[in-house]
Length: 116
Image (cartoon, rainbow, N blue to C red; front, side, top):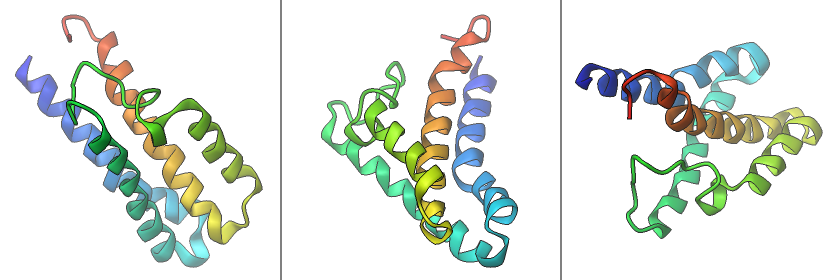
């Protein structure tokens, strides 16, 4: 089971820091370096974790709990992907993909047998 926790953490950080590179190349080819940097900077959304007690709880989903991870904020990030100009859309894409990463980190891994 310890290997699954290592795999879960690896997938989480791969999605947070490596996959945005591919998103930047795919959707923001003309300014992919800037878009990648913007998506990495959107990790600052995790500052809202500092308002929680405890700051990290492996049995709590970030999405739907923390202020900037709330469902109304996710809806705003989604609308940003649709309505923002391309230069600002990288922020919304980064935030929305961050929410997906945090969501899968809690919910998808719970689907594995014996993974509690």
